[in-house]
Length: 360
Image (cartoon, rainbow, N blue to C red; front, side, top):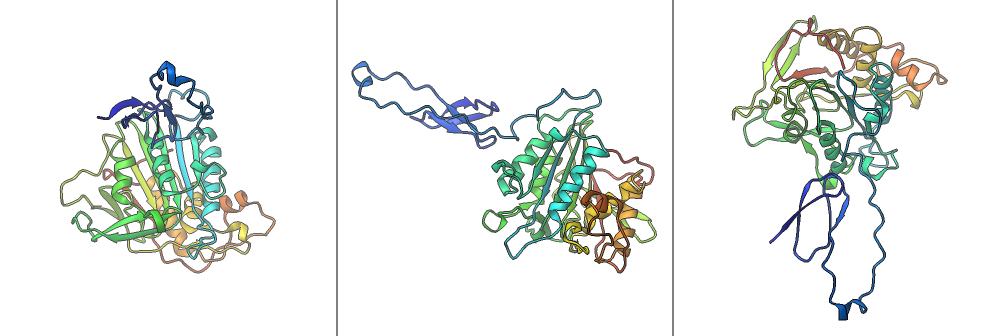
């Protein structure tokens, strides 16, 4: 018979096996100790006392970040994940810069509190912030945990994306889209069904989530029901991507919008700058550029600006080596040539993309 105890840190109910005096929480990693019955008097003196366990390392995913209480208009929270897969055959050049630039944009342009942003990169020293599959899952759980009307949430991912065969018949193209955490070769990828269940379906009325996904095969990686199919002149129609099973893949009343780097059958590119310091993902660069150049008024203006920039952007972005990372990436440079990818917009419900204001 298992006994239920609450985690000493996040209060999640845990099943305690018989004759166990401590248990580790799978969500926040805290160790909960359960008082054992006192030993018989004649045996007490024979027992060796173990040194007391040290305090568990606090997990950033088990509670709201420290800081002032939420403002009246709601909280702003973000998870930013940039994976370079360094020292492997999968190495990418621009993903760490993508993460840094997105954090800069959120703090300085959209007034996200730095304490409400969780960064997952290989540069982090906190073991909970290395972009492993477990940590990315927990960060997504943290992002939507306790959300309330008025909250603005954001998930940015720059790294490898992939796809795998879908045998349930729920995907229009027959494939599930996936994200590849740092340890995907041993722990597996994160499938779009899981992402949808984690951060889309739980969202209540009044909560808004934006996803910025700079990865290959990322068009419908949040499994949102509707995709905005836009042509080169800016005209668009909404495609119905609801599963044939009838399962609702939208929210519980909230709003979700996802900008992704390319269609499900396309790949996303890095930009190879004249200096290594300016290497970024093409999609992230064009999204930031659209905002900085005043094209961020509506969802349609952002998508149109990104798609136009991708079509005309070359693999070389001008600028001097001495130019700072943020200045270079937020102001852009000369472009030439073209990239073969088309940024996409998906959402929970169809809407007029040229009249709905964009805000974070």
